[in-house]
Image (tube, rainbow, N blue to C red; front, side, top):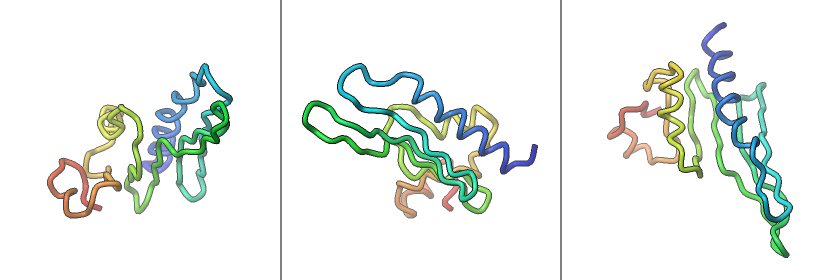
Length: 111
């Protein structure tokens, strides 16, 4: 399996666990959005909680130029570290929601 396919599989497996447990209250559905052609991956919450509409993106990951970009992580989990534990080098992970200036102070790629 080539690197790109392996990264796609890692991301899909990682994010799929978030839909295993749906919320017990309200009518909110947790959905995975996997665009394997353009390499965009998201976890979205959609539905109603009481009289309030819910629509939010909890996780957004892209693959760009052979690197995994964590564009948003609204979970308590360290997705970058989980990817490292799966075998992704830190040099192939970008924390996209951090400013480019701050990225240079992490162990991960600047871009």
